[in-house]
Image (cartoon, rainbow, N blue to C red; front, side, top):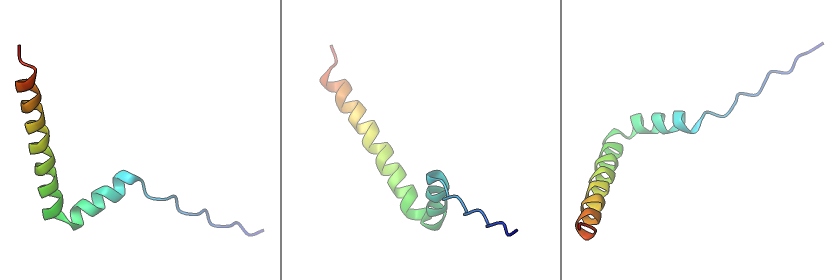
Length: 52
């Protein structure tokens, strides 16, 4: 009786994202801070628009 080897499960999205982040270190840090700055700016604009 031969047993077939189990197919490797696909790597999870998080694992792929972490591997990609390590490979493209500068780009991912740049995008992180760009997103962070955009979110802070968005929240500041919202607070200025809706202050009472």
